[in-house]
Image 1 (cartoon, helix red, strand yellow):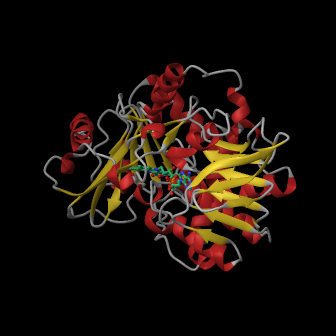
Image 2 (image 1 turned 180 degrees about the vertical axis):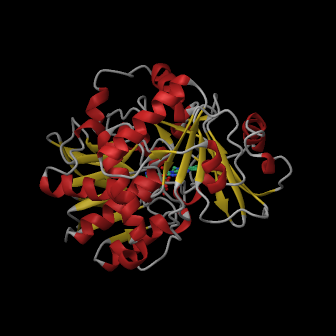
Length: 402
Ligand SMILES: Cc1cc2nc3c(=O)[nH]c(=O)nc-3n(C[C@H](O)[C@H](O)[C@H](O)COP(=O)(O)OP(=O)(O)OC[C@H]3O[C@@H](n4cnc5c(N)ncnc54)[C@H](O)[C@@H]3O)c2cc1C
């Protein structure tokens, strides 16, 4: 009989990191994925980190994760090309300015250097950025960016080196349960028994728990970015620039600039309607969405006007009604945990999210306490699918203003 101490469903950044941290602590883990390891939304991310979060538990996890990326190559044996470029965030309205101040203050409270800079200083740091009439610009020098492609696979391979079993091309078809406890999973080939199951199935996460009659309130949406052909003068260590009200981001990538953003009406993806075998690579993209956002901010990034697009990619991150991830136990089925609802920030959170979740699974507690991120915060709410969708889309639209 196939068995383990824990089965993790999904080898994206969340699942692979959780499996790695469980294996690192000596647990016998199985990491199953319906497709190739780490092949879905995770490798398509922008790879930005951001420490200035207004929620203390998130700021703490983001800080830990960013530090982990600095050590990634030593610990994982594979580089993710982390660049401590720093980041700038510009606000153009009174509300945006207050929001920016909150984030900087929370960061400073955790000992993270976070300061306001003048428009002139911002432009000196990022010469492709014309701040215009920004009311406030925040600078976090220890933020950075990384290449997303190897994050999840590196966690998975390192987990395997520590004894985890990797099961790519193994769709989990159901959760086994008895007496209110999870007993393992059913796959297309067999049943695997374990007292702990982690649902880290990304865009499919709600579908996995729904099969056991449990609702996890999240909605997958399409999110896209493009990378221009090389632009003279842009450098890897120039800071990431985020415009708060427009909710767009720009960073160095492959000699050019990466541009991505949060439109008002994203395409909502119904995972229960994905055809069998669907992969994120099959997701239709729409460059027009990004072009419209880029036109809105053309005055801030004049070089984008004429730059040609070299890469266009997108994926299916999951949004929650409050814009925060869901990490922790799933009430109603003892032994079931969830790591999802990445809210387009899961890649950069994954080293800390996986570490904290592994501690919660093995010790019953974690530092920081993940209770504020537990699915229980939505108890009794968002049972109506259209209310859920509208709350999640509301969090995605102009994301940096929430
Ligand atoms: C364009 C873009 C830009 C982004 N930029 C950033 C950024 O700058 N910073 C950041 O932190 N994040 C960013 N993100 C978000 C980031 O990509 C996600 O937060 C992260 O990839 C989430 O990882 P995941 O493990 O939840 O999902 P995934 O990587 O999709 O992994 C889920 C896995 O579960 C597997 N699975 C699903 N169902 C089953 C099943 N039944 N059985 C077995 N396996 C199953 C899937 O095959 C998949 O491999 C961006 C995303 C996009 C698309």
